[in-house]
Amino acid sequence: MTEKHGRGAEDALRMLETFASVGVTDFDITHTNIDGEKRGFRPRQTLQQVRTSMPHLVTFAAQRKNNVIVRPHSSIAQLVQLDDLDASAVERITPVAFLVLATSPGNHQAWVAIAPPAVADLPRRLKRGTGADLTASGATRVAGTANFKRKYEPEFPIVAILDATPGRTVNAEQLEQLGLVVPPDPGRPAPASLPSRATSRAWPSYERCLESAPRARDGDRADVSRADFAWCLLAIDWGHDPHVTAARLMQKSSKARENGEAYARLTAERAAAVVMRRGGPAR
Image 1 (cartoon, one colour):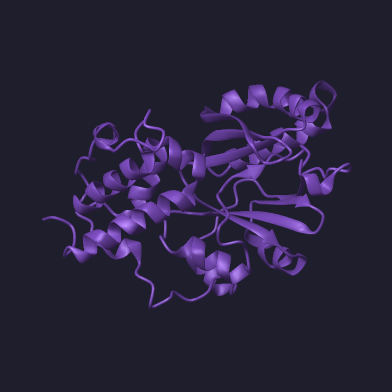
Image 2 (image 1 turned 90 degrees about the vertical axis):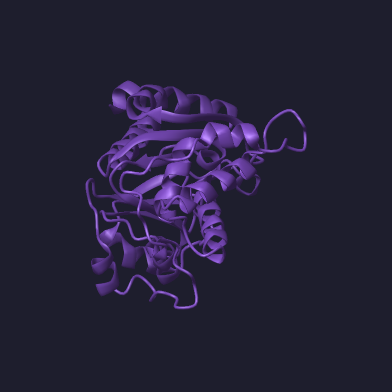
């Protein structure tokens, strides 16, 4: 593979296969320039599409000084990105992570795959327990590509794979036993605490919510943020679990896919809070 594509592409493809091993079936791909400005976005690219295009993306990124950023979507595991980890945190998390990256000098990132059933508050508790960035978006720079930022020029660091264990998943009990998560916050309302009666219930129409949303500031298109909130509000009021609603929003909303799981989760949590104030889901 090295002879065919070059070392950078080899590392990028190895990273893709590691994600695929924990159920990732497609990726959003974003390109940004050295100043962090978006230069391209491809939503929901299948694993095969990304495999095919990645060697070319790696080559063109180096030529244009563009960053290649992917957001993985798993059909099986709950993926948790632990960003801005120091060396001691990396040492603690490596035994349970399926992928560990060095994104810049002294800056590390780990990915953990939590096996079903998903636990709504577990990613936040894991981030707090490891000292990771609580605002990490769920998107990562591709291994084998340069981290193009002004502060690094002219020597741009290459994103490197430090450890990869394909197929590794963990559960909440394992993380708790290793002391990697903080206890649940009794003062924080748990989104999953709303009763769910939606095992066979239909979902509201996202397209209708988008059509009914007010215009954005430019007046040329719908305000997607308001459409997303309205859809979550309806879904949760119909009895759907907020965590499942957030995951479904990632499939429906282009803005959710672009901004990541944190955006979807926050939107669902805000909608859940409104539903709870109204007295809970409609019966």
